[in-house]
Length: 597
Image (cartoon, rainbow, N blue to C red; front, side, top):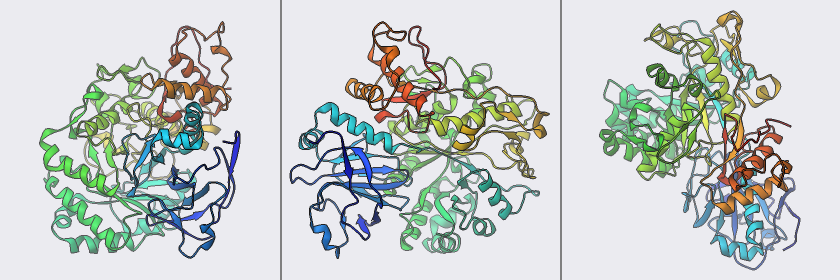
């Protein structure tokens, strides 16, 4: 093995490449990563997903699976002098099958499938044999995996917004699209397939999730021709000019008073079949948002389980469908509801992502610093209980009302600004949840506007980030650029509460996962203190943070130093799954962890 860097050359493929039906092109620039020269004749592939793309590091000209240069590209018959880097513009890599050892997602051993893929690093063959072939000592091999996984998780989380229209005073859709673009919002979720809205979103580069309303489920379940016509009129007519990325079939169907639950999975299957006919299924995912009321147990988080009356009839069939199609589970999670009903038991700081003592799960020992993470992980625990650990969650609704009735404890502009502002920071600068730190966390805030015709309590009409006149209800960051450019104060706008100041957005730190394997934790510590450039002087013997002298404490300090030096960028506290973000200062002896450099 040649030490140091190996330049990954563009390689010989000059035209498109097919990877199990996914079109790919050679990357037109050189990339540097710490790697090795190919050794031996064994066929090996490294698959690496970065920000929704499929990346293939090809280490020999021999085909593995269906990855190869085009049939007419004779130049590819030559053994490349270095690994070839390919990329795919496709938004998905559904059903990319291989017998592989996969890191960063241990449950995905045979099939890598995700509509908005969580980055996964896979080597064909056994870990030990690949390392031996590469000529790498185990520590160097671990560092290579760690380095690539860090690259994979850069900016993987995302924030979107729900665009509801139950109001008579909203701006026209073209103005709404201008508002979205002006505020850097690149993902939006709708509750229908309104033609004017979909047309306005065309060529905006905004990714769109559309919905089939609950009232159409019975027809969609009963008649394939109905979904064929629906997909043609509402999806293919607008795609790809309008970047439709997903279809929500129904919304919180299990609590629908019209008893539409039995229609859900057949409707999802028929919609998918209609997409397949038009060859749109690789680009558009299908799921259905569920409310947390679908859980029978959610506390402690590790005890999460689905309602037993739903599990057999609909939950398991739906999860089978999601797994088969490479989709994800849509979940609507509202810490506001839990807090409002249990304000005497739940800390408001815990509900708003503010500094708090946290809650330790008695079942798995994980510590939660926010009710939001605990709620999401309760659903992950429910998935695990049914052996669906490979299914990812997308939070399709969450928010906090800026006004409410007298009995709606916690509703108000200060809390709404704190919750939503801290949510954005938590998502864009953090990882996944404590239970699924290796999964990306995609969240749609509810909602874009205050909607004056929504029925129900006052809160229902006051979840908006914007008034109908396009003024903000309160001033919060919505993008990573916002987070970098503004101070940490999050205040409602004058229209909301006469300029009253709201509490500061919480700081974040990176700490080691105490349940991580020691060798992985050591590799992360070595990387941070070495190539990562972390300040590790305080954890040397005799220095301020040497005590306690434990791998967890020292790794936490080093990983946090790296995280802070990277300006708390998304993905910089992952380290192959051995670290996660917390919102209160870590406590290891008397050591004070830095919050910036």
